[in-house]
Amino acid sequence: MGSKEGNWEGILVSLKDEAMKILNEGIKKSDADDFDGAIKDFHEIAEVLDCVANAIIQRGRCNWEMKRWDIAHPDFKVALRITPDSPDINWTSALMSLQLNNFEEGWKGNERRWESTRSDSPRMKTNRPQWTLGSDAKEVCAWGEQGVRDQILYGAFLPELRKPVDGLTVIVNARHIPLFERYIPDMRFVPNIVS
Image (tube, rainbow, N blue to C red; front, side, top):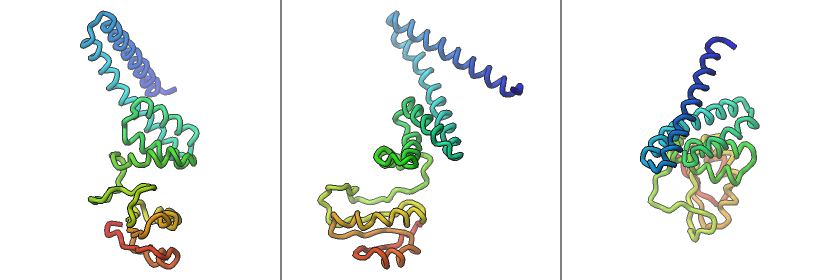
């Protein structure tokens, strides 16, 4: 182990020791009914936990990029337990779940991408309500917000989406329109001017 690695190990041990001291101080204050003092101590620990959660999710992302899914997935789960309301961690965990064929969990968490600072996909702005299965809407608009390859991949599901509604308009990359019109009839395709 090089000196730089040894130095980091010492820093981490010191951080852990300091966090434990602050935690124990907060517990003592709480036991002595000094709740405001305890809250300040616990708040310091909570701020450290946000940093730790981000480190864990970044480690998970690195392992994910290296296709070490069995290592990455537990990191995403731990980060979610630490900061369950984080849209970035929820969305990243959802993407991992989709890759592991856990579609129910993955699609549910994928909705958090709209709140994430890491997603660069713009959300469609409309005054119409979002359609859900079982809705009484007769005319539906589907929007290809993903990349061009994803639009082709998910285009295979358009006939299923068309079944419960009277009309379906699909906004996709303009290059895909001739392909979709040829193979998926009974739908209206319009170009996405930003794709």
